[in-house]
Image (cartoon, rainbow over all chains, first blue to last red):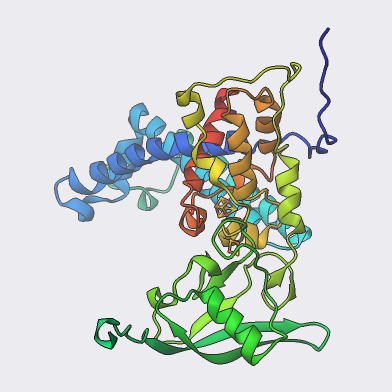
Length: 148
Length: 246
Ligand code: SF4
Ligand code: FES
């Protein structure tokens, strides 16, 4: 004969399922990735080229984005940094806003700005063309065939 | 004969000023800082000074205390900006050239002077099921190896003083957060090999107001008068939730 002992108090009513756990894990995984991504970015832009920081110009960026490797590198950096940063800001908002309406508005605008920036950034990285065909020659950088 | 009697030197005493945050809704809604000058000894604790004020200067001063020896957890308060037990804080260890500031713990509603409403704190504690959950009939001892016992030894020391929870900046602004003390007490059962309710508790703490609210500020670890590694316990519960088991 076995007796089942009931729990002495009623279970807590749970608030609905939430993504906090995944948010937490995302922060911890994207963090180390961002450190590598950002430092390689800084070193390759500011330290490696001759002339250091003064060497950065339109041509330099155009040259970098001609290589798929840097396109994908920058894309990863863009997405991870923006989501990481926005999620961090969301946390701060959750911690420090007192009115539910204000909190919702702020969190909503944060994700709005974040997605707009991600969208624009992604678009620029993949459609970037330093020498668009049919553009006026004086608007183009010196290395474009139309200028030379 | 008289020569044999050692003259016991007088115990040195000194004067300190205590600034106490007073609030009595029956008299006025106003909160005010009141200073008291008391003569104390090197062995006196802040609690003794508060007793002196209550017994000799102003009987209306209100605070909780019971054991006076760091066991019951009644007298957690904010002393010079840090949460501590008044009965475990020696006055001589504080900077006595300055007034000593004493105020109620933060984040819980003040009822009178240093007394706060502890109900939200206890509610969070009750919500994590702070009791052994085991389905077999308790007809014999539930044995446990010393290693298994050591696994949760640290969190058995909690005296529910609320010093940790009320030192947490997340709790200050979000009273819904379970708070470190509830998580510490959940940890005590989650990692107990005799307990069978770990999953239930992990599920409860996976809540929006559960462990993920913790920002690893370490205020709780610093505040705990029992020296419990509170932040570590919270981290272990987080890991257990990720793994799905203790
Ligand atoms: S963990 Fe420490 S500070 Fe928190 S309630 Fe328990 S004894 Fe007090
Ligand atoms: S009075 Fe009991 S812990 Fe301080």
